[in-house]
Image 1 (tube, rainbow, N blue to C red):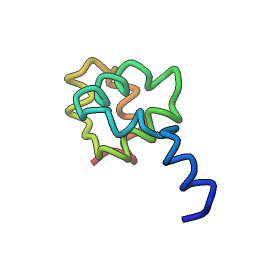
Image 2: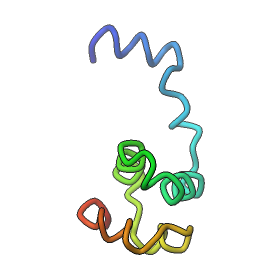
Image 3: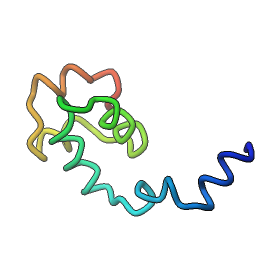
Length: 72
């Protein structure tokens, strides 16, 4: 790990993900999947979300099928 990454971890720049629960991540992805896909893709791969979870949280079927390659 490089010096910059160690420094940013010590400063707490990336702490918002460590305090995020799986349920919160599903809600964020379901609401943000069309607005900010980069953030949604990161959370999907980080938590290993399934299509069923996203559909139950209120994501549209078209949006979920558009990213089916990322989902388990």
